[in-house]
Structures are given as structure tokens and as C-alpha cells.
Amino acid sequence: AAAPAPAPVATAPVAPEPVLQAGETVAPAKVHAAEMRRITQQPARPAVAPVVKTPAPAASERILGGKQITPQQRVENDYRRALGQLQDGRVSEALAGLQQTLQLDPRHQGARETLVRLLLEAQRPDEAARQLQLSLALDPKQPAQAMMLARLQLDKANGGAAALDTLMRSLPHAADNGDYRAFLAAVLQREQRYREAAEQYQLALQTAPDNSVWWMGLGIALQADNHPAQARQAFERAKGLQTLSPQLQAFVERKLVQLTVATK
Image: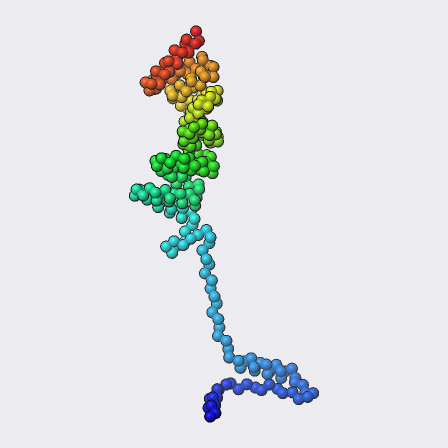
């Protein structure tokens, strides 16, 4: 049986294309009119809504709680979180947090100094020394850290040379620091560089003329450098200030006796 014919679909009447006979031509105006009818009778395409692109966060920003934060804000957030963990007694977590803070910002001195203190309290001096070396490599203008690193280096066998190198690197940034110069003088004296030690003690005493311990150190350096008369004057000044401990006072008095005998 034949299939039923499909129902006719109503369409808009379209003007038939002109059929040309042999040798027949169509005026351009007629062709244009036919083309216009074909275009206007085609169904209109729906308008496409414009696509609005939302800019992605910059590489220097991150999303946190629906808000964009800068790298520096992230560093401070990590640092404060580590301090909170430390206050709660979660030392291992605080150590990890401080190390993460320094990975993001190696120049964060608050995190560096806190981390060094925790490592020293945990009896991990080698790691503390490495942290101080990293910090001073980035910024040598930190006399306090240089002195701390030098003390750790002095605890090592033959660590005097390393400690001296550390102190000399930061010396230009500690010109008016008497404690720094006196500590440098003591290290120079330990390395038997007595003349340089005496010079550093003298510069230190310019900042604190009544420091009896530094006068005693100057006397030791001068005596070792074969300047007995000047050494005696330094020891006498140290004794006269009456601020030495009993043990050091007795040491200075013995030195004065030795120098008196030697100069006669």
C-alpha cells in the first residue's frame, strides 16, 4: 500500500527564477530585483547576544574568601598564622609556616629572626646558621645578625676565620656600633691579629669611654703587640673604673704586676 502523502507545508511564495531562452538576456535591473526578493524572503537569523569576558585575576593576585589578595598580603597572612601557631604551642607547625613565609619573601626579617630563635631553642645551630647566612647574603646591613652568626661559627672547630669573615663583611654598616667593634676586636685577638684588635678596641671606646671590659681587652692586645707602656695605661684605666667583676679585677691587677716588673 502506498504511504500517505505528507501534509503540505505552507511556505511563503517565492518568485520563480527567470528562465532564459537561447539568445535571450535579462536586464541588470531585473536580476537585482529578483535577488533582493530572494534575500528579503529568507527567514531572519536570531540575533546573537554579545559575549562579555570577565578578566581573570592577574598572576600577582589570588582569590581568598571571594576577595583578591596581593602576594605581600599572602606573606603577612602566613606570617601571622605562624605566630598564632607559636602562641598555641604548636612549634613544629610554626616552624613550617615561617619557612613557607620565607619562601614567598626571603627578605621578611620578622619571620627570619623568629625562625632563627626557634632553631636555636631546639638545639639546631647549624640550621640557624644557614638561615643567618641566607639573610646576610640578601642584605649585609644587619650587624646584629652578623654577630649572632659569628658566635655560632666560633663554636665550631677552627671557626675563627669564618667568624672574622662574617664580621668584616658587615663592618661598613656598623661604624658607630661599639659592641660590634669590640666583638670584632675580640675575634681578631683570638686570631692573633693584635694590632688590628687594638685599633678596633680604641674605636669601640670612643663610643663608650667608661667600658672597663674594653679597656682590659685593649690592654691585652697592646701587651701582645709589644707595647707594654700603653698596655699598662689601659689596664690602669680598667682597674680605676671599679666596674669589673672580682675575677676580672684580679686578672687586671696581675697584669699590672707583670708589666711593672717587665718595665723595670
